[in-house]
Length: 550
Ligand code: TNX
Image (cartoon, rainbow, N blue to C red):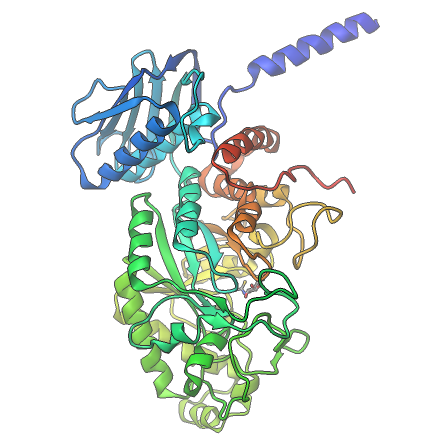
């Protein structure tokens, strides 16, 4: 009996091993047919693509990637019959949309067909994931068979907005570090980088009409905060900070565009504005400000129990100078970022200093505003108008739904489990889902034994449950979803990587792949495989995959 049982078990194990997919693509493609056989890259790799400006960088990126790790020669051509054939065909398949692709690997080589260049780029990312993990190595790896399984893939995204938010205010990351982050996003078909450029702890983008934003607002003194010190408590430099020049921003925008990634800049207003006020005190409602008013690390000036401020960090809605300031900033940003949206913040605005201001009282009387939320609504609508006047649509954190904005403003739903996003979608706003419950990757991901708690805990399997179009939402209005990496307690790029991966995989799959095709066990298998890729790419990650033991 026992023998029979062992035999059955052996059969079962063999079956599961052999029926398991040989490929590990993240995010999981819509359809994969694996065929017998392998294609081995020849020692001279040719890449063919039609003449198309938007495709040129895709060809270059792919060729470089292939040649660096294999050590093989690569050539490009504009006619077919190459090792890798990139084919633009507007009538290929409507279901592929702008970003989808069909990829086939057989004895003849590799073929990627798409309606648009973005689809070809995505197909190229999948192609790289079919090759051995060593393809991610930044140098030549010898004695490897550069083979990929014969396969037919049809793939396209479920969501248009597939994003990560990176907070560069609480801690600053260099141009090269941002480019490295963009490289990683592109591999996993994430197409939107929400760049949180301003906050209490530092203003990070050069604005020519307000130079003090960066000469003063980009530099902070570590003090009173229980976090935010750098590099370690007791060992801080005198000032900490940095900023991106407009030239650097343009360079990053171009780099992202070549990888079909949009960058949505955020200026967080009217709260979270200490860095602005340190540079231009007249933009607050408080005069005079305390003598030692300066950009500081940590948020100990906020009383989180009563939602009151000890020190003013809020722009004054009753001061016309504030609106001309915002007008200038938005004008310059609109020139730097050629995208549809600009994020205007709106979260966690506390009214302590508005309540003390005579100017705000007069504004309320004049505009017949009964509450301070209505005052924030007045402020928000004026900012929205400025943004619209430069041909952009605004995005606000979900608080702006309560204070009031027009329907053209998209809502970024962050509080709780996304309820505010469901509501906003039914009210007719476009919505980006980034609920803390599933997508706050500043929260810790490992067991408490191994990792200190940063605010809260968010395990990989919870991120994997993220559904950007939950029941009750008007799916037609959900643009997509993103994970948010706040960096109060993330000091350097290695930590940024550690916090992002592999939870960024789970996010990518939640916004790219059909919800019903998600499978946790299979995702874990693929994640383990991709750890090898991250190792070769020298990108850090958290190994804490499994459910907590306790
Ligand atoms: C809330 S999410 C914030 C951020 C913090 C984050 C910490 C949001 C719009 N505001 O300022 O960094 O919590 O998790």
